[in-house]
Image (cartoon, rainbow, N blue to C red; front, side):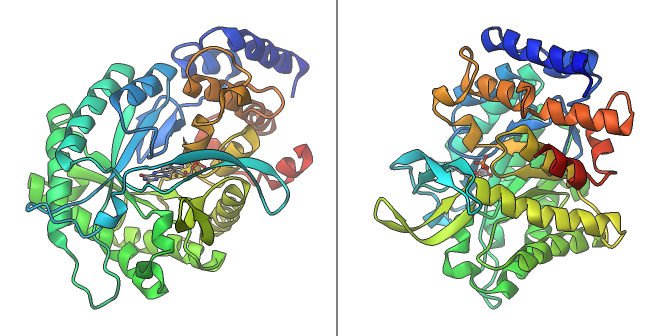
Length: 420
Ligand SMILES: Cc1cc2nc3c(=O)[nH]c(=O)nc-3n(C[C@H](O)[C@H](O)[C@H](O)COP(=O)(O)O)c2cc1C
């Protein structure tokens, strides 16, 4: 990278250690570096390719406000467990309150040090009515800050091929969320993430590959039908369905098969509209607070996700996929090289949980919210921030400005190798 550009980056890094990040961030970066860090999530434009992943950090309006103030592109709300109109909820076991949450160091199989959050909670544990109120408040905050707000659900998943789907859970939950969304955005489809959480991996429900395939094929259809029933519109006008893929307890080939199943169904016209890849790993033998089996993240999570996503990207480059869908990457996004790899595998956005939750001493920036400190580090770090990587890509490609889309048209493995 040109010395003058590197100097500019170093001076911005230093400056924003103490000053707030500029607003809007994308304009500053575009004008100063010729790099466009806007992108799209599920086909919707977002002002920053980084957003917050669903979880404990998106359960309260003040958390959503902090995201908007820091300039995140989007915020995915905590997963609510679906219920039918009578309040029946087949996945109730996933609505545990959090008892204890621990942010701790974890070492990856290759020796890399990272962080993971260990806890025993699962989905939203307050009432569904409370979730709807929260969703409404979050939409208002999102609108104030030009930040896309996305609800997340988990609904009935049959444990075997013979079990009937509880369609009432899909219809009621999607319908109620759409009522709230449409008071804000009557003409815009509602983005929705469907959470296949890592804790499913350890449950009896996910023991069979055939059952998991059955879910991936049918969940988008059921959500689509629910949206049509609720709005009397063609589903594509009412909703954009994202499947948040989980890391099952099978091998990488099965992970790839899950993605291929989603793409094949999408090509037929009634599958998912976008993919979130991929929720945390699951260790069935580890114990925490008396519960056996815990989800974890850190270096092994990003290594596995990137291994699978790069195989998918290779198939894409060879023209071997039935179609392509927008992908939002999640899993140990904590520095520029990991973020850049997700983008170069075809992800258009990145969603973060753990890196927004570290002890304050882990961020170089000494002022502002955790979200702002993390963004400063992720983008501006002159050693391994995302801008270093994007500027290098811009130089290689000779394009001005560099966009996220341009990244996927090149095989970056060689330069990633060189810089490491
Ligand atoms: C404490 C905690 C709670 C989470 N809760 C949810 C959830 O309710 N729904 C969901 O889809 N993902 C949930 N996740 C997964 C995150 O959204 C994210 O995809 C995953 O942690 C990987 O990103 P990270 O490495 O940045 O944490 C949770 C993660 C953590 C650590």
